[in-house]
Image: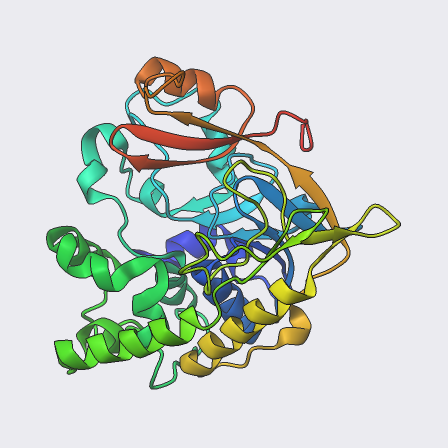
Length: 341
């Protein structure tokens, strides 16, 4: 990993006072906390691949998308999902990624040749390694916990050991000067890690969602709301917006119940990282709502098969973001409303 080369190619990655649109989960929260604490950033929106909330009168093209690979040269984004099917037969519009720092693309990894080598960590780990090359970023003594929890890294380390060790080399983790050295190379027992993660999970579960606002009524059915304490829920499984209320001026606010539990989780993570939560820099109201269509190539039901031909057709269509989720499937978002054409 050549930090200087990456920053030279994408100088905006170290820009101060950026407006941030983040994935509404622990990786997005941690990445935002990093930019807020050390680059004076501000969260102005959330995007989960189905619904985008962005502050009214702010153009998403002027924002930095964190933990999201946006397939448009008009957007700045940083993501870590695998997105390339075959590096030897790229779509004609592959230059759409020219303003996206895409971790797997940095190493020229694709599904056909390198699926077992895909990046196994979260966006925050890459950002810490990159941004600490230009900023003095400090981590608190408990930062180990959220950084192992994020994107299930603590479960990945021993499930994909060879791959993790390879990415350790690329991220330069074994260098004692690396900010990630203490996280992955410190002298701590398996049992201690398990106990710390378990304590964190119990705190996370105290913040599980207890209700859902479906734009009409507030439902208090607790079914399927386990393990949601680390997420801001803005859409349901079908892609319908949830937990937002309309204002008279055609803007939307995230409901107070959802705001409060998410703020508590952000504060927990910030404290453990040794950072400030700066909740005044997190916006939860006065949003424009954009709803996208979701697609999948996996050969199931009426879905097309995930192959080279269908992949190219999808990418060269109205694809806005995508992620290869398995060796046989890719999920993608379509800007069929023409929000950003």
